[in-house]
Length: 106
Picture: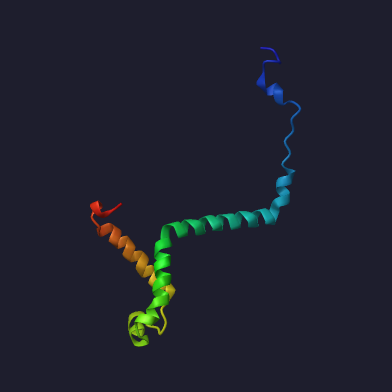
């Protein structure tokens, strides 16, 4: 086998330098963190988008429909806590999907 046929000889003059990677440092780590948080946020919105929208709607409309005394009985506070409403709606949708017959699903 001659030297000309060896594929390793095609890269004799090529040098790879990775010194520019060190210059990213903190800025690169920060950009990677922002990208990761955006991906996680998008995933959460895709998973819980309907529950988030429904919880926002319930939180805004609850005081117009129910009294402060009833709200105190249900939630233990005079105002409607968004996190409690969201968790109740998310858990309710999971239970509903488990109990619905398969023929009702899309």
